[in-house]
Image (tube, rainbow, N blue to C red; front, side, top):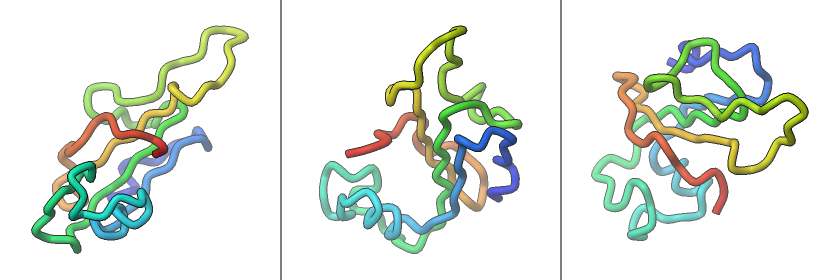
Length: 101
């Protein structure tokens, strides 16, 4: 599934992880109401986490990608976007995740 999110832009990442692994990586347990997957019934569910600082070759969710920089622009954190998709179906679950906590 991650092949669908290939990018010639090295600033982009797509990774297949479980919901439980995502919770550990984000330091927000599934039992915490701040978790995007609060009370997830299947912690082994596979998801694709997509982080975009530029543009993916295949556009996601009607053009999901970070904002383009104006000429001479400076890269800033708010231009990074993150999304989560269902690894089995490719359906978008969340289109705007916090990129850091």
